[in-house]
Amino acid sequence: CKLQGEVDDCSCKVKSIDSLNNHMVYPRLKSLLSRNYFRYFKVNLNKVCPFWSDDSKCAMRNCAVNICPEDQLPDGLKKTSTKNKYTEESQEDCQGDDLGYLNTTISQESEQAFENWTKYDDAQETFCEMDDDTSPHMKYVDLLLNPERYTGYKGISPHRIWNSIYNENCFKAPEQPAYNPQALTDYTLEGLCLEKRAFYRMISGLHTSINIHLCHQYLFPATTCYGKEEWGPNLDEFQRRFDHTQSNGRGPQWLKNLYFTYLVELRAIAKAAPYFEEEGFFTGNDEEDMDVRQGVKDLLKVVKEFPNQFDESKLFIGNKKEAKALKVEFREHFRNISRIMDCVGCDKCKLWGKLQVQGMGTALKILFSGDGMGPMSTVNAGSKKKFQLRRTEIVSLFNAFGRLSMSIHAIEEFRKLLR
Ligand code: FAD
Image: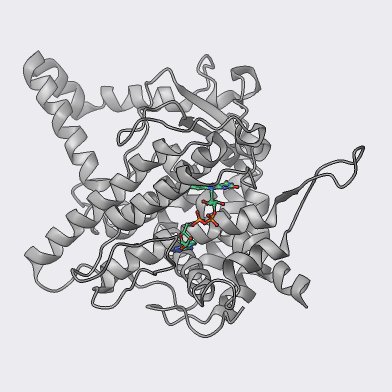
């Protein structure tokens, strides 16, 4: 499918990513993501779409998501468990020396101001609007039991989402016409700066990955009255979307954008490696947690040595005021995309859409928080603020990277089928 050469805006070759991903990264990630710490994701699938009235609640059975009952969760994640580190942790935070002092001295009014200030401060770091952890609609989902695959979600509803993402939230050169998926006019990156090109490439790479998954785990209808439906790779569907000749020449570029997104998230994991090397990956089972820590270290070793990684130091440089304004704009656009995920009309697609956008947002937080606030602050003693990731950010980042890694692996399978 004419997928070759270097990934644009990175000097890494498609071929070397294929080889390193498929032999080194993918097998390690696959095993890691099946562990309890990574397989349970807490999400609110009932948030109201903030942009338009929810037109299309998908009734297809493949769109349904199975919620994980509380008693099936690992001990450490149960609300009722005494081992729940996440409740303990937040209580400890509030009783810490500094905050304890503040809490007794500030009035209720200033307490509110303090809370708003903390929220504001956190928002400056996050690129994503996160689900409110205190909402009763927050539920754990077992990702292994709800795989991302073909659901039959198509037509006006997903087109509205993709349209809104590309037309209203990706950056455009002033003279560029509106992106019209039906008319096969493509988004052009001409005249855009590196930051804006990167933004589009990451979104397009995510779009590619989602579509590869639905081609790779496609549902073939039964061929006889008594036959069974079957899941498997659909080469025709893959070619329809990505083959050079069938996609008006655009498929190979969309595939390359997947590799770009992969390099961005890989770099974020490599950059935050010192942080992850100290993380406990707590689930309440000592043996399991130790295995996971070992598995993460093993993965980090490979990730850190990956050649020609995405270079975040080339972004948001130059005139300080302009760079700062551009970063704010970049963050606001990305946050909007995280809100659009609540408008997806198929629960299974929404689950994976929210997870992957949150994972990408976590990668951006790691790459662009600034060293005083970013992962290096945990290593550089004496910095102003200690870098922190919530469990949900870690789970979404590793799973999002896992999706991209699996997509690249799936491309290899499609190549074999083609041969
Ligand atoms: P679409 O994929 O809908 O694309 C619309 C237009 O965008 C295309 O015509 C093309 O011009 C352009 N385009 C296509 N790919 C790219 C790219 N990579 N970069 C830039 N432009 C591109 N379906 C499932 O079966 N399972 C899922 O898990 C699933 N998850 C989804 C998650 C989200 C957040 C959304 C919005 C949709 C999801 N879908 C899922 C639907 C799926 O992505 C497609 O929208 C659907 O299969 C219809 O495909 P299509 O051929 O009409 O083109």
